[in-house]
Image (cartoon, rainbow, N blue to C red):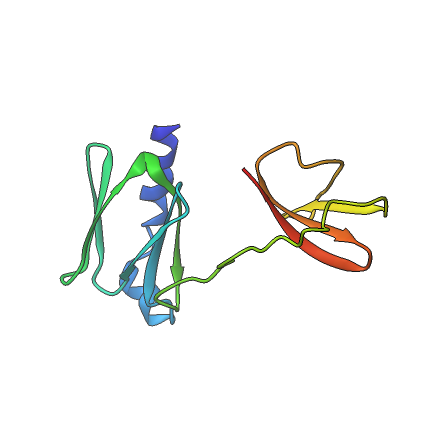
Length: 133
């Protein structure tokens, strides 16, 4: 798995970072397994590997990213990415006898919330989000 990830990273760097920056993608974003992201300006950036870490530098910023903790790496035209900031659960989202539809964030309908994750619940003509830990 680790060898495949490192090979994928090396192949993805075949596109020169300066050329990507000239196309409007000014930043290189690293999403980690814990859900956090780290961003570096793509222009002039270099990535080298030192053991189990990817070392990313661009002259002003230096990042050390454990390769085993890397989920995705992509180019972006924004310095930061956005996502779900907060999830609130309505108390009646899963109570009562009305028909309830439960979906994963991928849009797949499921019978119950037996696995951890974030679910979208449709009930009584309203939609709620539910976090299951």
